Length: 472
Image (cartoon, rainbow, N blue to C red):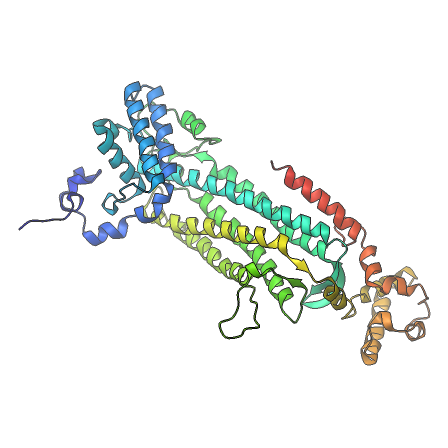
């Protein structure tokens, strides 16, 4: 009876590592342990690392010049196949590395088998992940910069727009919309710093660590690091193949980034509601209801808010993955890629959505101003006024509390009370009190670094723009 199973299943020697084995891998185990369905996204990075490795082997005399050129030409041809979608990926070849190496040998013959001299899949995959992640970090950094640029531009346009500032979601003190937007930018600035700091630790080359102990071939690790644009080689071969700190650190960055975007999303959802009605989100970032024709749902910020749990989960998954692993490499580490890939994809998509959406926000200035006039948001200004008259702050606090209680009974705001009504709580209150009870006077009084005064907002925008432009 004929057996139509591929050789790599029926014949263990067909595996690139199969010389030691006497029976074939179980078909389920083969599928269960394979990673090519997801790690093929690192294919071009794998070829990039192999090209550098082959060039170094040629330079130190392990490969002849002709062998190097055969390998390099073959790898470049494979890269063209991959980019065109014509590469024959095989689960039976397990992973991206074995697929490419097998294809190279198929193309150029026995010389292809020399490519793996002086390295292991352990340092190869560690190199590929770092190359892939470095590229994603740079893309995420560019998108984060685009979002911050749009945010600062909007903040500058809204430097004079007054809105209520909240604590406990209760009206607290008036602020400017521009000032509020700059608070988002401050969070994102820290995220960018964390991302660039993470990049420093990503940008180290593990290539040459081999399986765990290094190699007896006269390799030049500094040269491969240089060819691949790494800052330097990693320092310890055991750690080089087993370290995934950089991936965990990156996922921690994405968790914080999405936490910040989620907080902003929550405010956008609230502000776009009919209860607040502070902003208008463009239709292209919203959807309707299948049953309620009046609805305009803020789906983009809601989805960003929801995706925060997704990246938080990836961070926990990687921490848990690494917590009990002995040195050096273990098969567990195959589970690092899908969380890492998805965390990077999710962060990039969310940043793109925000960078497109934020500059298109429309502030409903009249509604914001009317809301700021409610809730006694200038009460603190009245207390500060009394302190400047020589009254101790705690006494001033009590006087203002009594004034607010009276205003509630009268169904008026503090600024709507008469001078006589205010003076019944303190004879030190004069006609100049109404200058501090206005919303405009309140925000203008916060005229210091980090304050909400329009002049400070414009100065902060200029400073933020300088910092962003200084990244290039």
